[in-house]
Image 1 (cartoon, helix red, strand yellow):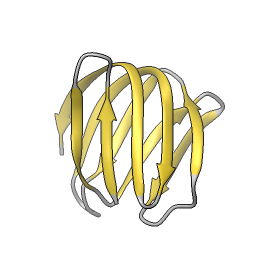
Image 2 (cartoon, helix red, strand yellow):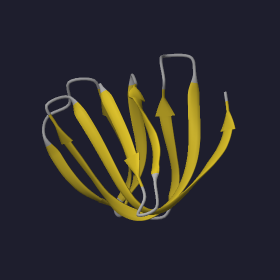
Image 3 (cartoon, rainbow, N blue to C red):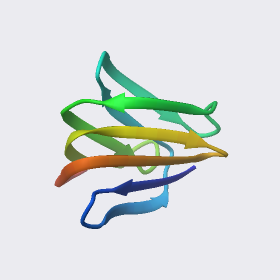
Length: 86
């Protein structure tokens, strides 16, 4: 699945991923490959980008939205900071 993470200033991430875990306003949730279409509001918290089943990148995000359509997830956030890679 293609993931794009965008802030008002720049594109923070773009690439093929296994999935992404996001902080929704009602709790965390995960989007995996071939997910059904979705639009959801995001809260403040940690986003985990699952590059594959063993490697992940972490970001802290502050509010925004995610749209999933045609195996592409677009995360629009007010702000984001990259954390450690594993």
